[in-house]
Length: 229
Ligand SMILES: *[C@@H]1O[C@H](CO)[C@@H](O)[C@H](O)[C@H]1NC(C)=O
Image 1: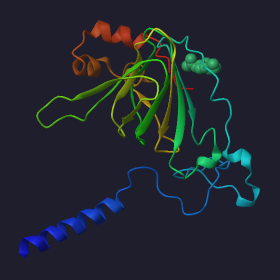
Image 2 (image 1 turned 120 degrees about the vertical axis):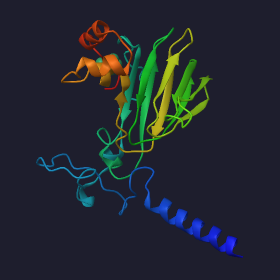
Image 3 (image 1 turned 30 degrees about the vertical axis):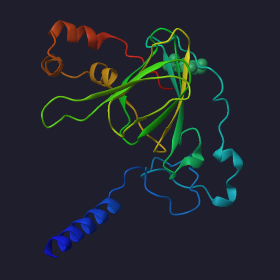
Image 4 (image 1 turned 90 degrees about the vertical axis):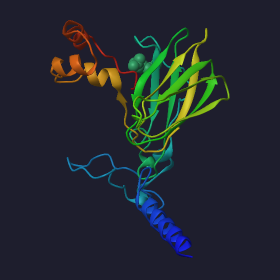
């Protein structure tokens, strides 16, 4: 009897806790809150809403995601984002989309994380080797979870975790992914660490990555191109 009550209490507390914690963007409090362009240097969590009477179909629209993108960058991939910056109507709705193009034979969407979104990816063309890393494990290390994907395959990258996609096929690859935020954010690991502006003290990187200081300084001089537009 006591055990049953305890269980119920724990259950209620957990249910309450999970309803307070928000796993993605907060829920909207109106039908829509189409982002306004000018904010006069004032920032809020999200964007200010346009007068609903002034809202048109253009605020919810984006065209051209059928067009292949330029994949000649050093990493051989190109991410076309369709988030609140492209579609103001996405403001407060907690969702966005990307198209990703990969060059044949090794086009790479390099290891990166989205601080504010889980991603669900659909391959429409080509063959991708994809994966993500877990958080640091209690027993040490990080588990790597990978899969080779073909057209029609869908894969999930949980919020915040480091993930990547590599084109292991002989043809171009194309994927579309939806993300659980109007503004998922992206941190490309190598770019952030070695291409930071201003640069990090090389001693930090030498020790953290077990690298020779000369190599760190060399890496810090590289041009770290961003494959996100
Ligand atoms: C991605 O493709 C677009 C259109 O093809 C191009 O304008 C842009 O420079 C490309 N971005 C990168 C990072 O290669």
